[in-house]
Length: 334
Image 1 (cartoon, helix red, strand yellow):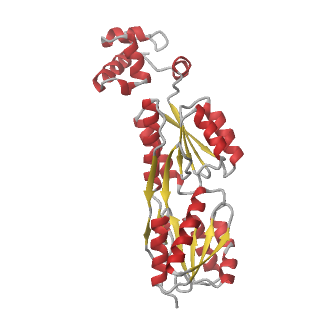
Image 2 (cartoon, rainbow, N blue to C red; image 1 turned 180 degrees about the vertical axis):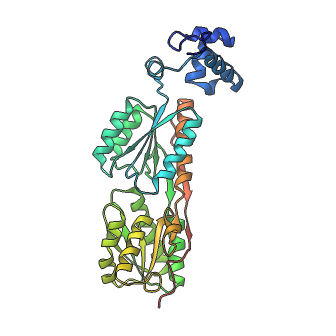
């Protein structure tokens, strides 16, 4: 260091900081490992003293002595899907404010890969946010027994979870299509193991039955723009007048496939997406169901950070409502 009055970070001890800050050694330890247990003024005084002495926290050593790593992990099934980055960003923002770093894992929609990621992360993190996990319930519960888990879009009794309820948005979507004269609709589904897809299928079925719409389901498997584009042949063969896609990425692919065939949206067929992640950037602007992924990230982070601060598990079940955002891809049946 250029300041010779400072000790090197290697030689500075908790005792040195305690002496300068005028507090006990245990208070210094808490200021770095459990600051929520102290007053803001005490934490500020300790950290100011540490800075004056040139002290740098040794996270590895602290983890060995306290079992607290200062890290959490977020695991998603597909980081390329635009639903997940806003969620991850919000978790990271709140975690950073609480003094945690965030590890990010992408399971590539594969349960075994997700299991491998969580196993490797477990040795370095204090808790998990699992977004749309593909693990079976037994393995999720096993993970939660060793590290607190907060689920997003997966409803497992007894675990903390944040659920985006598609029923409101799909009710509005079906009513909107019915007013426009549509009577036969196709749902382009996501992965069958996806909790979100299961909920959307069920909510759409209930809404369609109430409105008197016929709904066909076309399975896509992994949702992608190419899957949506490749589904266009089946959509046209079905004779439907409207498409509801599992997400905006699939809807964008459908629109591209229809355009290649010279079929106009919404003049010849209406299209509705889900999640409201790409909608305003498509041409024409996509009618879609808003899913508030950033709000889900906020809720998940708050739950996990609360669990870590209190060292107490919770089975809180936070539900986020959805609604239809009408733009330019739906119109009256011609």
